[in-house]
Image (tube, rainbow, N blue to C red):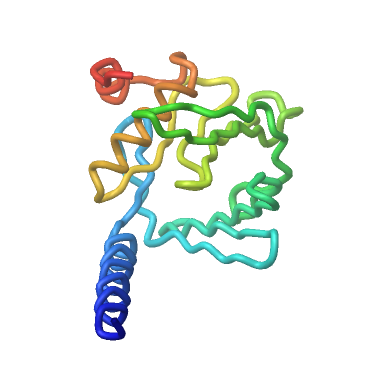
Length: 176
């Protein structure tokens, strides 16, 4: 009986370590409407009580998103910072799984300066666009399954006006 428990514990630990290793090996990057890539060196998540700090490290800047109870509140970076106001909080069902998606706006009062951020606890911020001009910047990775899920979330949440070029063609091919 004792040996059986030890085997189960060892097997469970091995599975947990395998899953953890895969998550660490996923590299993320931002893709813009012109399909240029702004490489993100890493995404770091820090938990401090009910507050989470999501840090996106890129070659040109580091963006820190602050969340409290899974709601984005503030963004801090050398090129953009400010308070985020929630516009929408909804649940999207994809392949019988529920995904909470929230839409936030930054600089809402600034003419041509507003930025819309799409957030889900599974990925953090997965898409960004101007509140005025077409075009979209979205998160992708070295994991094709995660990429497809992000694109399905984009298709379900981002207005078509902001989706252009190659991404638009890819989203049209996706089955809901």
